[in-house]
Image (cartoon, rainbow, N blue to C red; front, side, top):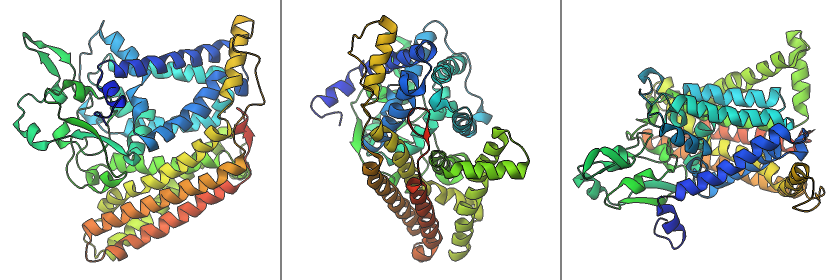
Length: 471
């Protein structure tokens, strides 16, 4: 792709990432200003509409169509880089925290806050959330070297990392033999000035991914710093089969072996069941469930019932939906692998289905509210300047009818389910070649049950909330 006409020269341009970051920084400033000072009505404010309708939808569509380009243009990194010119971070990220657990906890926390505080209806709270991201990135990356915030903390980053395993593009080396003869490893160390070896003129990979040993998209932000740093022009942004990296058992740079990464297995589970939970929050039956939980807990407050729902959806149900197939596979495979190894091996196989559910959910909001940004922007400019620079707001502009989107949702869920079954089978064929069919059967049944549950969720009546669309 780096050698395609027009697209290739732009991506290879040294200021390509900066231009993307500046564009998203301008949008972030608009979100913050309108969220703080604009009209505090969810459907009429750019903070809520751009963040919870358009950004989320375009994020998953971009991941499906190309890759992790939203991390490429991340405005938080731009502000952090500017601050680092004044203050260089002094220490490395602590070794004991070099896993995804903090990011997983924050990911769950954002999902919980979204539901508890109805963030889709609160422009000012949404603006403060965006500001909190900027401040968090600054606070962490002005203390710790590299991309510590991106790799270990940022909940959006963790979402993008696992979702990008479904992307059709991957940063990888062109010719491995060229890397074997390389003695400088500029792709990870950075390119130094010939007359001043202490000066880095092109930084290498801040996430610690050594390109010759890199596999797939996990932890890759598509920053293309390695492309700029490599003196041999030996790095490609190439097409690949989505999801196939989940079957690779080799040790990969910056990640290790997936079977030994309990945190990545947990992230895959939270990503998948978080998709179901977030989608369930937009349909009417959620209120009946919360009411029943409130009665059981003997409280009228919302947060205990919502917390109980999160425990059920992200702990109890996954324990059964993943633990039982893992135990069955361990038994059907003749006890060749322990239960723990089976869990960490097969948990990433749920990612295609989880991505399909996220795509069905966020795609619904994007397609049914695609045109809402036009009247909201017109209204924001009218409020700010006192006259209709962009014209009078056309509040009738919405998007597709929900009935037209539902077949697409079914298709996304079906494709995700087929992808999960395919990955699970390849894992079984890799580890249990003489009994692959038996080993994968429990996972086929589990994926089928989850797919049916997703179809049921999307077929339920939508609860019209905050920004004029369900959940």
